[in-house]
Length: 134
Image (cartoon, rainbow, N blue to C red):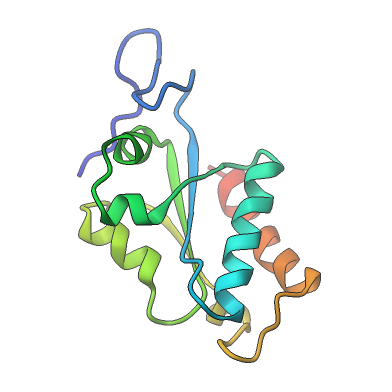
C-alpha cells in the first residue's frame, strides 16, 4: 500500500490534518511490555512527537484509520514482545516503509519489565529519536 501524503495542492491530508502526520502504533498487549508500549505511545503523542492512533483499526480495515495511515509522513510501530503484532499488522495491511521499536531490543523482556517511569522513558527516548529525525 503506497502512502498518500497529501490529497491536493493545498497539502490537505485525507485524515483531515493540515499536514502529513507522523503516526505511532502500539501493540498494547496484555503484559507488562504491552503497558509500556501503550504508555510510551501516549506520551509521545501528548508531547507532539507524533500522533498515536489505533493499530486494531488497521487490522480491521477501518476506513478512517486507514486514511490516517495512508496520509502519514512516517509510521512508527511499537512492539513489546517478539511476536511483533503491530509490525505484522502493518505489513499484512501492505505497509512496508515504517520504523519499528521492539522493547526486547531495548533490554525490556516480557514478564520481567514493569511499567515504571524509567522503562517508559527509555521507549519514549528511542521513539523521539526516530520520529524527530524524520
